[in-house]
Image (cartoon, rainbow, N blue to C red):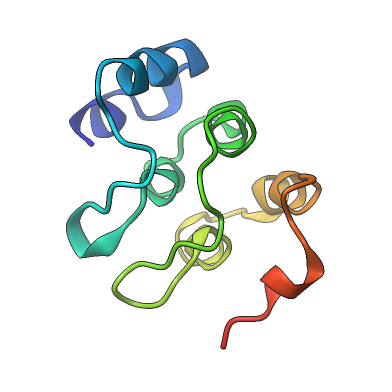
Length: 103
């Protein structure tokens, strides 16, 4: 979490890969139940890093935080211009139409 908060928009895929290789957990829940993917979105990390988190490292797009928000909702809530990231996330092969419904 600290690395993400410090690096923010300068975080690279290689730095994320190194952190995961050194013991960071892709499905660990942080403060308020946020996933690593959500922390990347909250800290406005590069789209390439967020996408790699899903495509290369297996982040679960369906994980919810303590407020029942998934990565999609987190993006809409915290990103002042969420269209680019949402477009990229929604185009991933991991996204299925049923995932867009939150019960």
